[in-house]
Image 1 (cartoon, rainbow, N blue to C red):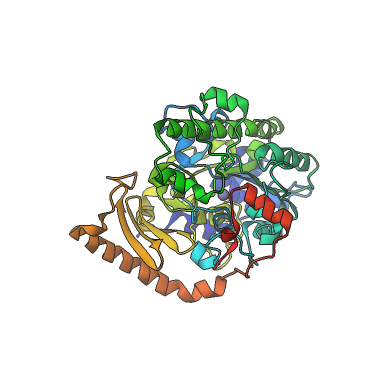
Image 2 (cartoon, rainbow, N blue to C red):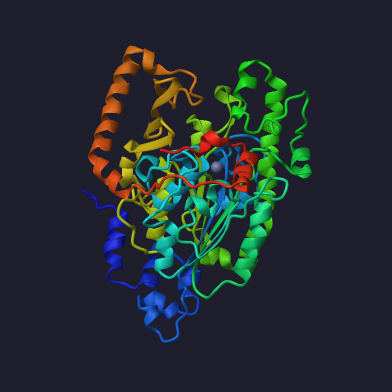
Length: 493
Ligand SMILES: [Zn+2]
């Protein structure tokens, strides 16, 4: 049996220096060989040289909140050029075509990015709970010598919810919408200021913006680009927080023109967000940081734009669960498309693995370095793994790229069971649970899931980090209300 690529790397790394390993693993010619070419080519130990600078790569994680994958033009699934800035970066990156989130709301999904745990393990299954992590991506890097800083749009990423754990510098300024924009337009200037005066040594920078999120405020340029003009009274911004617009959809007031407007408006938002990233990416290129850093682009969840009678998120349909993910390694190493089914839980172990920082216990994700090597065929088991997406009591489980089972609360205590064949029915229009073959397959898959959950249950209890919920003051309530969240969202398991 072939030994997994990553295992071999990790084992051999114990006998070589960190930087020598990075030379080989990441192919970092610029980082490793500039000025120390002899050391690289001869396999010497560059760190042993007196005065050698700390050249460990930086990590930059960009999370564009509420960004559904199919609306980014680098995925090539539509003929609209929504993201020219990101397209260029993605062309130099490993682009994961089948990545799903662990939840479809902000707090739980980001917590999975940071901890490598599914929501049922970390315990935050909807927004509003306070968590006390034992570790996060930021804390692991901080302990290993990276400077850590986060610049976010606030909301459920504010300090009172605990997701800032491990960040030395953290900005999540809150406030009512009228006083504070929670988009990249606000977080990027602070991130650039920090970069320009940052402490010496490698850094981890987390950059977040609620750009395509309710209340759908696109720039005039974005609106013009996609001709987003309302043809009737439908106003998604005005409905922000109104039970995610469901009553309007069900009453039939949402017609084709409204749908076109909503989709144009969302594209305009995405375009606006992409344009906002321009000065940040420009700075990385101008300063050379781009090839001294691993750059990740992703989102915490997508957005329904009328599909399944829903506008917004907080449900587990694919348009909400599927998220973009690309990782740009220095010098464009491993650029190209990756079809392996991956999850946001894989982010933390992947990045720690790439930076040669130990992965803590309790992490459920896998290092995606495994999917990037020339030996990627050796990892067919990626295709049969289980990926869980959870919101409150609703849960879906993806088996590879094709099958999806789900449990959805429909009324009172009643849970609807679901089975979708995403290969034949990517829009999830036909629940196969009622067919005899579908019912049988559901049982088989559900048994597999149940066995895995039973096997890992004691670990779930050990790694649970939810600690009740914080009291919110009036200003904090107003901020969340501006993002469309009512008081019901603040409950948590
Ligand atoms: Zn979010």
